Amino acid sequence: MVRGSAKAGSVGVGGELEAQRLISERDLKVGRNLTTTQGAKGGEVEIGNNGVVKGPLVGESVKVKHGSTTDDIYAEELWLGDDCSVGNIYAERAEVGRGCRVSGKLLYTEDVSLGKDVSLNAQPEKVGSLPSPPL
Image (cartoon, rainbow, N blue to C red; front, side, top):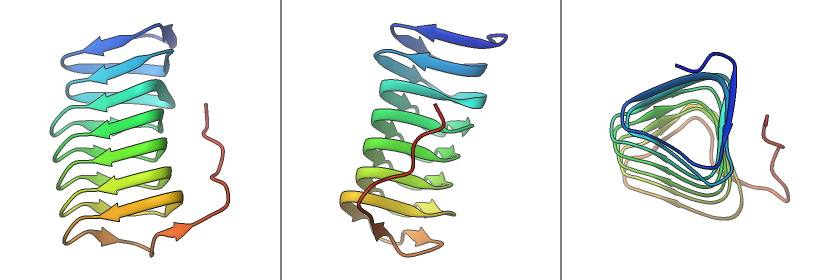
């Protein structure tokens, strides 16, 4: 657990990580659970299988592995494994795996690919620009 905010070149944690705000200049890899109040940001972000992310997740490349649950995701490129649950997706390019559930909006600027049996709260919307990430 990190009290307050943390900033690092790269962050790699096999289990759980908790912080108010977490910013990594390069890689941000968490094997299981990531909890923030203000969000987490990295160049290349990866969440392990069956992970739980609380707080916004921001990255150039974001990979959320199978069975994970996240709040909002802001990414240039997003890959969601099968059977994930996510709040809102704001991405240039997004690949959403089979059986995923998107409870908010899915906004994209370039391309979106949806696997079989994806559950959407609203149809994906191609937009000219994405909302600014919270950090």
